[in-house]
Image (cartoon, rainbow, N blue to C red; front, side):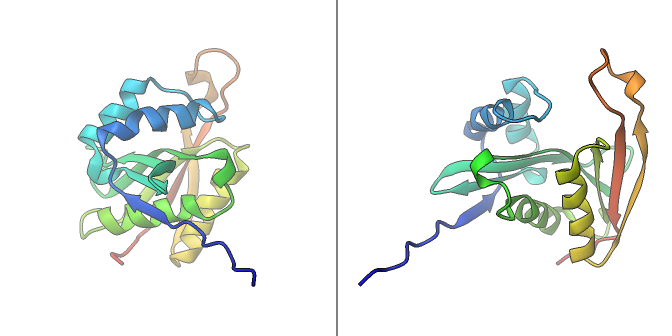
Length: 168
């Protein structure tokens, strides 16, 4: 008799400093903007409440780094979402956003924001889909013009603003 293999469960949690190197490695194996390893270790240490890891069998398969901007205390700003190449299309990014907003949305924090380049179809679909799933609006507005970036290889960044969100 043949039995079905059990699918490993994705566990969403706060990062620990030991996750920083795995986050950096995941980014460097992707098309995401690269940052120093120190950035990821620092995010794990000082922004645990606003960052989330996704692990399968104890191995990092995804993460989100985020923070509450001092000038916008009603916003959780997503800096970066990384998903391992063999894990894409499984809903992990949505799970990371769900965990992030469940943890951070409050009477004070009501919006999720992120910047996305015009050609990043996956991120555009993720944020618009997240807004739809939460039955709230997603507005898109200019943020950083491409002329602000050194060189000629960076597109403009558009702000995606989702909300107002309610505590789940």
